Length: 246
Ligand SMILES: *[C@@H]1O[C@H](CO)[C@@H](O)[C@H](O)[C@H]1NC(C)=O
Image: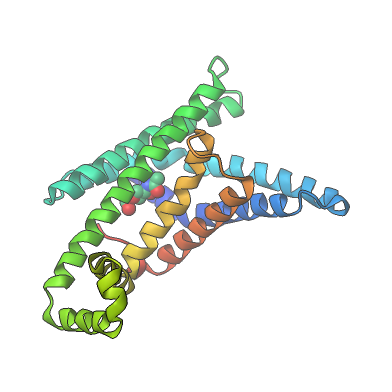
Protein backbone atom coordinates (compact mmCIF):
# COMPACT_ATOMS: atom_id res chain seq x y z
CA UNK A 1 0.00 0.00 0.00
CA UNK A 2 2.75 2.45 0.99
CA UNK A 3 4.71 1.60 -2.14
CA UNK A 4 1.63 2.37 -4.23
CA UNK A 5 1.13 5.68 -2.44
CA UNK A 6 4.80 6.57 -2.92
CA UNK A 7 4.67 5.73 -6.56
CA UNK A 8 1.59 7.83 -7.21
CA UNK A 9 3.19 10.72 -5.33
CA UNK A 10 6.14 10.49 -7.69
CA UNK A 11 3.93 10.30 -10.75
CA UNK A 12 2.13 13.52 -9.76
CA UNK A 13 4.62 15.65 -11.68
CA UNK A 14 4.09 13.56 -14.78
CA UNK A 15 0.32 13.78 -14.39
CA UNK A 16 0.48 17.56 -14.18
CA UNK A 17 2.54 17.77 -17.37
CA UNK A 18 0.05 15.48 -19.13
CA UNK A 19 -2.84 17.49 -17.74
CA UNK A 20 -1.35 20.78 -18.95
CA UNK A 21 -0.81 19.24 -22.40
CA UNK A 22 -4.34 17.86 -22.46
CA UNK A 23 -5.90 21.27 -21.78
CA UNK A 24 -3.45 23.05 -24.08
CA UNK A 25 -4.72 20.69 -26.81
CA UNK A 26 -8.34 21.41 -25.88
CA UNK A 27 -7.69 25.16 -26.01
CA UNK A 28 -5.86 24.94 -29.35
CA UNK A 29 -8.66 22.84 -30.85
CA UNK A 30 -11.12 25.50 -29.75
CA UNK A 31 -9.03 28.35 -31.17
CA UNK A 32 -8.50 26.54 -34.48
CA UNK A 33 -12.09 25.32 -34.87
CA UNK A 34 -12.99 27.73 -37.70
CA UNK A 35 -9.70 27.45 -39.51
CA UNK A 36 -10.36 25.20 -42.51
CA UNK A 37 -6.68 25.02 -43.50
CA UNK A 38 -5.75 23.44 -40.18
CA UNK A 39 -8.15 20.47 -40.27
CA UNK A 40 -5.26 17.97 -40.18
CA UNK A 41 -3.67 19.67 -37.19
CA UNK A 42 -6.99 19.76 -35.33
CA UNK A 43 -7.47 16.02 -35.98
CA UNK A 44 -3.97 15.32 -34.64
CA UNK A 45 -4.58 17.48 -31.58
CA UNK A 46 -7.86 15.67 -30.94
CA UNK A 47 -6.18 12.30 -30.96
CA UNK A 48 -3.39 13.66 -28.75
CA UNK A 49 -5.95 14.99 -26.29
CA UNK A 50 -7.77 11.64 -26.17
CA UNK A 51 -4.50 9.80 -25.62
CA UNK A 52 -3.38 12.16 -22.87
CA UNK A 53 -6.69 11.74 -21.10
CA UNK A 54 -6.53 7.92 -21.37
CA UNK A 55 -2.88 7.86 -20.24
CA UNK A 56 -3.67 9.98 -17.23
CA UNK A 57 -6.47 7.61 -16.24
CA UNK A 58 -3.89 4.81 -16.09
CA UNK A 59 -1.51 6.93 -13.99
CA UNK A 60 -4.36 7.73 -11.62
CA UNK A 61 -5.02 4.10 -10.65
CA UNK A 62 -3.26 4.44 -7.27
CA UNK A 63 -4.84 7.77 -6.39
CA UNK A 64 -7.76 6.31 -4.44
CA UNK A 65 -5.33 4.87 -1.87
CA UNK A 66 -3.51 8.19 -1.90
CA UNK A 67 -6.67 10.16 -1.09
CA UNK A 68 -7.71 7.76 1.68
CA UNK A 69 -4.29 8.15 3.24
CA UNK A 70 -4.61 11.95 3.00
CA UNK A 71 -8.05 11.76 4.66
CA UNK A 72 -6.57 9.72 7.53
CA UNK A 73 -4.04 12.52 8.00
CA UNK A 74 -6.48 15.43 7.82
CA UNK A 75 -8.96 13.81 10.23
CA UNK A 76 -6.37 14.42 12.95
CA UNK A 77 -6.18 18.19 12.40
CA UNK A 78 -7.00 20.12 15.56
CA UNK A 79 -8.81 22.97 13.77
CA UNK A 80 -12.40 21.71 13.44
CA UNK A 81 -13.22 23.59 10.24
CA UNK A 82 -10.02 22.53 8.48
CA UNK A 83 -10.48 18.96 9.69
CA UNK A 84 -14.04 18.80 8.35
CA UNK A 85 -13.37 20.54 5.01
CA UNK A 86 -10.20 18.67 4.16
CA UNK A 87 -11.35 15.24 5.30
CA UNK A 88 -14.61 15.54 3.39
CA UNK A 89 -12.68 16.88 0.37
CA UNK A 90 -10.32 13.91 0.47
CA UNK A 91 -13.14 11.37 0.86
CA UNK A 92 -14.94 13.02 -2.06
CA UNK A 93 -11.74 12.88 -4.05
CA UNK A 94 -11.33 9.18 -3.23
CA UNK A 95 -14.88 8.54 -4.50
CA UNK A 96 -14.07 10.51 -7.64
CA UNK A 97 -11.03 8.31 -8.27
CA UNK A 98 -13.09 5.14 -7.74
CA UNK A 99 -15.50 6.29 -10.48
CA UNK A 100 -12.51 7.24 -12.60
CA UNK A 101 -10.93 3.80 -12.14
CA UNK A 102 -14.19 2.06 -13.03
CA UNK A 103 -14.38 4.16 -16.19
CA UNK A 104 -10.80 3.19 -17.01
CA UNK A 105 -11.60 -0.50 -16.50
CA UNK A 106 -14.54 -0.13 -18.86
CA UNK A 107 -12.47 1.69 -21.47
CA UNK A 108 -9.95 -1.17 -21.62
CA UNK A 109 -12.69 -3.81 -21.62
CA UNK A 110 -12.15 -5.25 -18.14
CA UNK A 111 -15.79 -4.63 -17.28
CA UNK A 112 -18.72 -4.07 -19.59
CA UNK A 113 -22.06 -3.85 -17.90
CA UNK A 114 -21.90 -0.34 -16.52
CA UNK A 115 -23.64 2.82 -17.57
CA UNK A 116 -20.76 5.01 -18.74
CA UNK A 117 -22.77 8.23 -18.64
CA UNK A 118 -23.87 7.70 -15.06
CA UNK A 119 -20.37 6.92 -13.82
CA UNK A 120 -19.07 9.96 -15.68
CA UNK A 121 -21.66 12.17 -14.00
CA UNK A 122 -20.88 10.70 -10.58
CA UNK A 123 -17.17 11.27 -11.15
CA UNK A 124 -17.82 14.92 -12.01
CA UNK A 125 -20.11 15.30 -9.02
CA UNK A 126 -17.53 14.03 -6.52
CA UNK A 127 -14.84 16.16 -8.14
CA UNK A 128 -17.13 19.17 -7.85
CA UNK A 129 -17.81 18.52 -4.12
CA UNK A 130 -14.10 18.14 -3.47
CA UNK A 131 -13.42 21.48 -5.16
CA UNK A 132 -16.21 23.25 -3.26
CA UNK A 133 -14.83 21.94 0.03
CA UNK A 134 -11.33 23.03 -0.96
CA UNK A 135 -12.62 26.49 -1.78
CA UNK A 136 -14.38 26.65 1.59
CA UNK A 137 -11.05 25.84 3.17
CA UNK A 138 -9.37 28.60 1.13
CA UNK A 139 -12.01 31.14 2.18
CA UNK A 140 -11.67 30.10 5.82
CA UNK A 141 -7.88 30.36 5.78
CA UNK A 142 -7.99 33.72 3.98
CA UNK A 143 -10.51 35.06 6.49
CA UNK A 144 -8.37 34.02 9.43
CA UNK A 145 -5.28 35.62 7.92
CA UNK A 146 -7.29 38.79 7.27
CA UNK A 147 -8.44 38.96 10.89
CA UNK A 148 -4.87 38.41 12.03
CA UNK A 149 -3.72 41.24 9.82
CA UNK A 150 -6.45 43.56 10.92
CA UNK A 151 -5.26 43.21 14.51
CA UNK A 152 -1.77 44.20 13.38
CA UNK A 153 -1.20 47.87 14.32
CA UNK A 154 1.23 48.74 11.52
CA UNK A 155 -1.16 47.45 8.98
CA UNK A 156 -4.03 49.42 10.45
CA UNK A 157 -2.08 52.64 10.02
CA UNK A 158 -1.34 51.77 6.41
CA UNK A 159 -4.98 51.05 5.75
CA UNK A 160 -6.11 54.35 7.30
CA UNK A 161 -3.60 56.14 5.08
CA UNK A 162 -4.98 54.39 2.06
CA UNK A 163 -8.53 55.41 2.96
CA UNK A 164 -7.51 58.99 3.65
CA UNK A 165 -5.88 59.33 0.27
CA UNK A 166 -9.21 59.10 -1.49
CA UNK A 167 -11.71 60.62 0.95
CA UNK A 168 -14.60 60.93 -1.55
CA UNK A 169 -14.47 57.27 -2.43
CA UNK A 170 -14.11 56.35 1.20
CA UNK A 171 -17.13 58.43 2.15
CA UNK A 172 -19.41 57.69 -0.74
CA UNK A 173 -18.80 54.12 -1.83
CA UNK A 174 -19.14 51.88 1.16
CA UNK A 175 -15.87 52.45 3.03
CA UNK A 176 -16.37 49.08 4.66
CA UNK A 177 -16.27 47.27 1.35
CA UNK A 178 -13.26 49.27 0.26
CA UNK A 179 -11.43 48.34 3.44
CA UNK A 180 -12.44 44.69 3.04
CA UNK A 181 -11.13 44.47 -0.52
CA UNK A 182 -7.92 46.25 0.46
CA UNK A 183 -7.40 43.86 3.36
CA UNK A 184 -8.17 40.83 1.18
CA UNK A 185 -5.72 41.89 -1.55
CA UNK A 186 -2.98 42.69 0.96
CA UNK A 187 -3.48 39.34 2.65
CA UNK A 188 -3.38 37.39 -0.61
CA UNK A 189 -0.30 39.33 -1.70
CA UNK A 190 1.60 38.33 1.42
CA UNK A 191 0.34 34.71 1.31
CA UNK A 192 0.85 33.62 -2.30
CA UNK A 193 0.21 29.96 -1.39
CA UNK A 194 -3.37 30.78 -0.40
CA UNK A 195 -3.85 33.00 -3.46
CA UNK A 196 -2.55 30.32 -5.84
CA UNK A 197 -4.64 27.54 -4.30
CA UNK A 198 -7.77 29.69 -4.50
CA UNK A 199 -7.10 30.63 -8.11
CA UNK A 200 -6.38 26.99 -8.99
CA UNK A 201 -9.62 25.75 -7.39
CA UNK A 202 -11.69 28.49 -9.07
CA UNK A 203 -10.18 27.58 -12.46
CA UNK A 204 -10.82 23.88 -11.86
CA UNK A 205 -14.42 24.60 -10.90
CA UNK A 206 -15.34 25.45 -14.51
CA UNK A 207 -14.65 21.86 -15.59
CA UNK A 208 -17.29 20.05 -13.47
CA UNK A 209 -19.68 23.03 -13.72
CA UNK A 210 -19.66 22.53 -17.48
CA UNK A 211 -19.89 18.73 -17.34
CA UNK A 212 -22.76 18.80 -14.85
CA UNK A 213 -24.51 21.50 -16.93
CA UNK A 214 -24.74 23.77 -13.88
CA UNK A 215 -22.90 26.50 -15.75
CA UNK A 216 -22.24 25.86 -19.42
CA UNK A 217 -19.09 27.64 -20.53
CA UNK A 218 -17.39 27.18 -23.90
CA UNK A 219 -14.78 24.53 -24.65
CA UNK A 220 -12.35 27.46 -24.86
CA UNK A 221 -13.01 28.58 -21.28
CA UNK A 222 -12.72 25.00 -19.99
CA UNK A 223 -9.45 24.52 -21.91
CA UNK A 224 -8.01 27.80 -20.70
CA UNK A 225 -8.99 27.30 -17.05
CA UNK A 226 -7.71 23.70 -17.10
CA UNK A 227 -4.40 24.89 -18.53
CA UNK A 228 -4.00 27.68 -15.95
CA UNK A 229 -4.82 25.33 -13.07
CA UNK A 230 -2.39 22.68 -14.37
CA UNK A 231 0.37 25.28 -14.67
CA UNK A 232 -0.28 26.45 -11.10
CA UNK A 233 -0.17 22.79 -10.06
CA UNK A 234 3.23 22.40 -11.71
CA UNK A 235 4.59 25.56 -10.07
CA UNK A 236 3.46 24.49 -6.59
CA UNK A 237 4.92 21.02 -7.08
CA UNK A 238 8.27 22.51 -8.11
CA UNK A 239 8.23 25.11 -5.32
CA UNK A 240 6.74 23.53 -2.18
CA UNK A 241 6.78 26.90 -0.34
CA UNK A 242 3.99 27.95 -2.68
CA UNK A 243 1.87 24.94 -1.64
CA UNK A 244 -0.93 25.60 0.83
CA UNK A 245 -0.58 23.69 4.12
CA UNK A 246 -1.89 21.52 5.67
C1 LIG B 1 -8.30 19.60 -2.47
O1 LIG B 1 -7.21 19.92 -1.61
C2 LIG B 1 -6.36 18.82 -1.30
C3 LIG B 1 -5.37 19.29 -0.25
O2 LIG B 1 -4.76 20.50 -0.59
C4 LIG B 1 -5.71 18.35 -2.58
O3 LIG B 1 -4.87 17.24 -2.32
C5 LIG B 1 -6.78 17.94 -3.58
O4 LIG B 1 -6.20 17.61 -4.81
C6 LIG B 1 -7.78 19.06 -3.80
N1 LIG B 1 -8.90 18.56 -4.58
C7 LIG B 1 -9.10 18.87 -5.85
C8 LIG B 1 -10.28 18.27 -6.50
O5 LIG B 1 -8.35 19.62 -6.46
